[in-house]
Length: 313
Image (cartoon, rainbow, N blue to C red; front, side, top):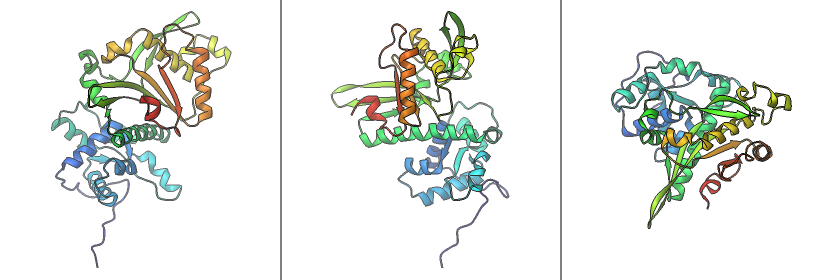
């Protein structure tokens, strides 16, 4: 008879952490999890298709027991609902220390286990939607061959020094004008990424995107009373978000912040009907401003092809 596979608790560690000699594949997994904050195991299986899901699953469990990876507690109720769900992984304290001390990854002095435990189910679901979308884009780039996915860490490494030194480089303030009133709104995209198009006879061209993933819970256009009140810029609505990006573009904040020109704002929502409502709000409330290029915003539902709408077929 074959050797029986050892069983371990899903969300707690027992005994002393096992010693693990990290491999290059392990480091790639740690970097991936750090990049996306949280990743489902099945998305890791897709990214690391050179390894069988069963072997990778055992390795992920070992990295969890050794505290290189963590499993956020917010996913526990998924298992109480019945059925087997893919486990979700975040960075553990040992993994954060390794990336910082051995590889120089700019990770602050943070207790990652505590951060992971503080995540709510709603926040976790949103983060997983963002990570899945980015992984889908990366895998489509691999399949095409003429496209290269540009992660935020590469963008940040080529950004101005002030951005690299910022405690939160992926967020920036923008002065917003609305009905004659002025306020400052902080933009914080769900992700920032790029696509590099490669042709044998041409210099590679890159396009950059500020990603917003909408889960269908945010108000698109508030009531007229809210639109006319002083609190409008501080209400979380899709229109307010679009206006902030429009003013960021108009004031050229993105180029000073990151050093690239003409980024696009990509909004991905749950269905085509909601995407159509967003496009109507964009046309009625935002694109009437002067000097906004027609292609600044891309709004699409999850069901539509990704890259065809961003770079063409």
